[in-house]
Amino acid sequence: MEPTSNLQEAIEKVRELIGDIEIAMLTTVSEEGLVARPMKTQDTEFDGTLWFLTKKDTGKFEELLHNRQVNVSYAGKSFVSIRGEAELVDSTEKIKEFWSPVYEKLLETTYDDPNLVLIKVTAETAEYWDTGNKFKMAKFLFSRLLGRNTEGTNINQIVELTPSS
Image (cartoon, rainbow, N blue to C red; front, side, top):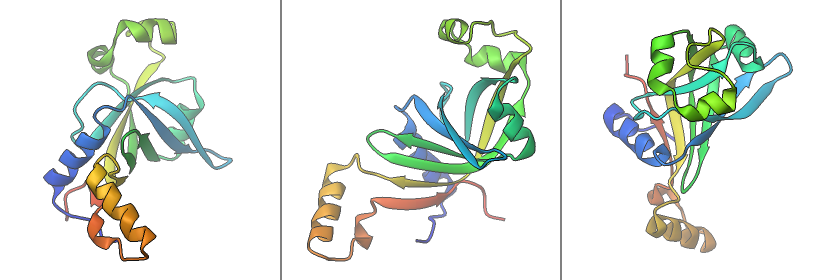
C-alpha cells in the first residue's frame, strides 16, 4: 500500500480520527522487547506531534533514553497507528500548559514536581482504518463478502506525516 503524500491533508485526517479519543497506547522498546501502556493524550490539536505526561522514575522514561522510536495506537470509531520519534521534554512551563487538577490526584503531585517530564512524539507516518464512515464500511464489507477487490473503498490508508525531502 502506497502512502499518500499531501502533508496538510494527512495531518487533518489524523486529527479528525483521533480527536475524540482520550487514551492512546504508547509502545516503546525495552530490553525485553516491545512494551505498550495506556496514556492520556494531552488536550492539544494534533499538528504532527503528540504530547504525554509521565514521571522520570518509570520504565518508559528509561526506555526512551535508549530508543526513541515509538508507536502510538488509538481505537475508537476508527483505528489509528502512528509511528514516530519521542523526545523527553523537561519543561515546567510546558507541563503547566497541559496540567489539570485530575493529574494532581492521579499522579499525587503538582505540576512543578521535578520528577515530571513530557513525552513529545513527532509523528512520521500513520496508518488508519476509517471505520467511522458507515457507507465506506458497508461497501468494504460487501465487496469482501463477494470476493471483490476492496482497493477503492479507502478504509485503510497510510499517510506520511513528515515533509518530503
